[in-house]
Image (cartoon, rainbow, N blue to C red; front, side, top):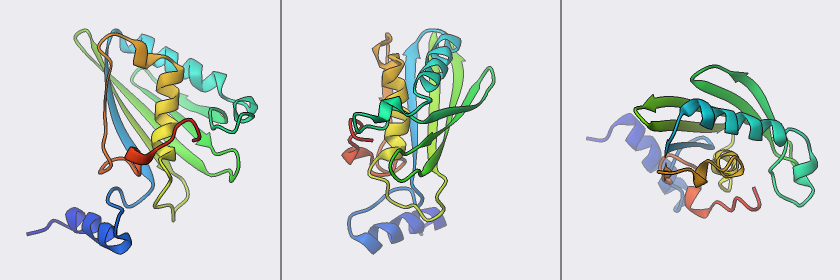
Length: 161
């Protein structure tokens, strides 16, 4: 017997013939790295602030127009605006310390109610901050996501988005 959520994913897959994943343009990513979450969080917040203005858009990419919304000891909320069409996406990073490991859950979701496909933009919103902050260079770094939890993840081109 199919669950309602499984049926929704199957319906989306059969409607387009190729798409299978979230029914709204979004992305869930989990990362893990050795170190203190407070240090990782600071790196990500600093990167959001560094990419706040439009200057990072000049080369055609989207490493720009990020805005910090809120910050607590375990969570960072931000937005990202696409430079051409001015679509907005909501981003959340949630941090949990597990011994010497920092576990980070990232979520990006399009504010546009009708968005289904996004060319991997929601993944790139998160990925660009992680790599810009050099979290990917920290010891023990791992990234976990898939097309089923991240719209068009496998075809994302983060040099463009």
